[in-house]
Length: 101
Image 1 (spheres, rainbow, N blue to C red):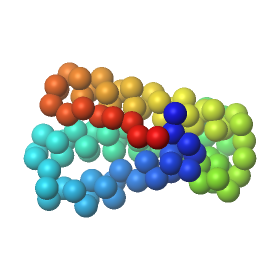
Image 2 (image 1 turned 180 degrees about the vertical axis):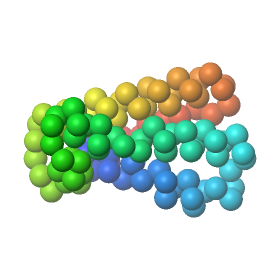
Image 3 (image 1 turned 45 degrees about the vertical axis):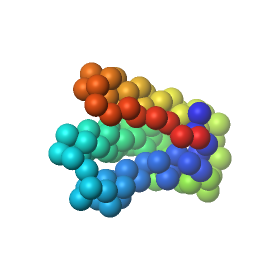
Image 4 (image 1 turned 30 degrees about the horizontal axis):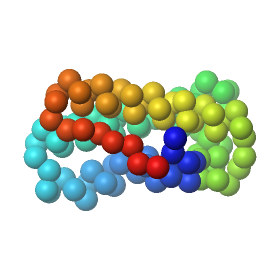
């Protein structure tokens, strides 16, 4: 399970996609953009579920605030997105998505 410090860095997939876009094949770029779309709004979804502001969830992810309930909700939502990406990847059979700790 990724740590909260790594969670915020992992969510910077848009920057990663922009840096690697020149080297990627079109199908890989499509898969990456799908991953970015799935991660987009993660803080907002968690915030809506908990009834708090998304900026508060962002601060928790960066380690500026503490909340066991919000941390657990972030991990659950993050893992849902990863599962969805793995499912999409398995269907395409082209790219294997691995999770780093």
